[in-house]
Length: 494
Image 1 (cartoon, rainbow, N blue to C red):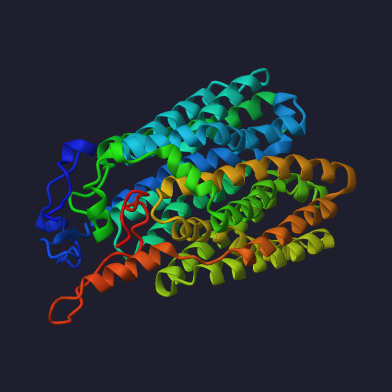
Image 2 (image 1 turned 180 degrees about the horizontal axis):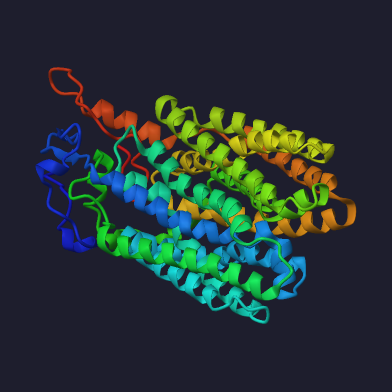
């Protein structure tokens, strides 16, 4: 077969030559390629952690902007003299723009790679923050909507990247953890979005003072986004000089013209276990989007004047969810029990939602903090599980495409649930609105139980391990788990 090392760095953006200070903790490994040819060299670089944390940083900045209006929706309604539904659209525009743009963006990710996608995401995100700085006047609601639209376009370039980035940069036993770190940044941004706006923008009656506080909030987010954009330009790399896994090494030898994006989409749409996951994932995450968007309205209805505590409750949901995400990611790396873990977490999300629904109106804020935290631990912890389970079910398709379809489903259900729950809350109250979400979580739980656990990536990795047995029956150390983006439909799983 010959030596199939990484192509020249000029193909996919700037790459630094390997040096001793930047080698992997385990160094490089040369592993027989399975047909008697020369070995493929793999290596883990310490800089992989800088790349994933930088991605988390700009994902954080973007996610913060998604929720910064919703958690102070009553104040935004007063400042811009618009109704609550208009303010809800400042959140739902994130969901709406994702649906038509996800397919061209995932195509771009496949064709141009991580660095181009990261630069476009940060350019749009930065532009959105500065447009919003100019919108801090009561008559300029349309300007703030334009700024939010720009930020929502940036989100399309971000949501599908964690699994791809993890597979391109990380080793076999790290990908689920790395994917969780990528999702962690998004969740941290939502957490800060729940906490900071109620502190920066107090509910005052003087419009001039209110405009000042809103402008300060916008300036802070613009400054942070600009700083991160500069770091991305300087630091963010397309991929390491040498691949982290055998499957990544093999992937680099495939010519781009051998890959058909549309054929990949059609294969995914015909994959029944994956399509069940697409719908069940959309139901779960769509519920989370609705709860996050309408949280201020639900809390204020039962606890008037508690805008700051509404933000803290949102923070509790997301912080607990970040812990859930990291724990689930580490658990998957250790056990590879994808369906079992996904199903258990889904059931516990349903139980958490039921408890939250029936305790919200008890009049004790501490109870809401506890139940919301439990709900967030499982509902938000489900996010990386869905990504990684999808990669297993769809190997060797591009993980960017499978993640894109999952997120598209989540955005569609997010819009439907946010509008529907908002109308139900207006007419029948928060309990009815939350029971509405519980019904769909029950449907999602049943659908998850029906998914056939066809773990294609694990099967391919086991086959690779068998083929790396030497003539003396010693097994080489293969770093193949988690090569989530390396496989392509035209690769042999032998």
